[in-house]
Length: 118
Image (cartoon, rainbow, N blue to C red):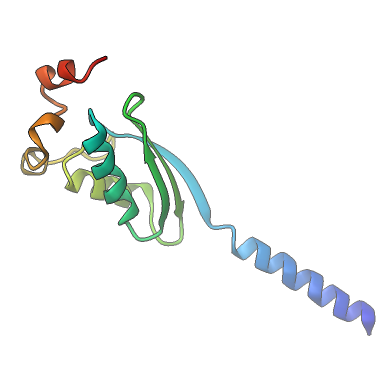
């Protein structure tokens, strides 16, 4: 009887540990040029249901994500980022979305890019 209880307990713990490992890591390239862009990109990502962590690097243009794959995917996150005006490789922001960002964040403009270079 003890062996049966131990086996059931071990099976239950193994099943629970497997069921909780839903976190997926991904990295996206997202266009932007400054700290305001960083805040906007990260906020749009975090507002996506299931996203647990979103960190965008101004220099590398990489958005590093941790999200629950059962609740969202990279396409949904890219859609939300594009909706606030930032292009990803997967989805481009519309002209209206792009033009909604602050003038210093117009990353498609070569002059703005030059102004943000070190």
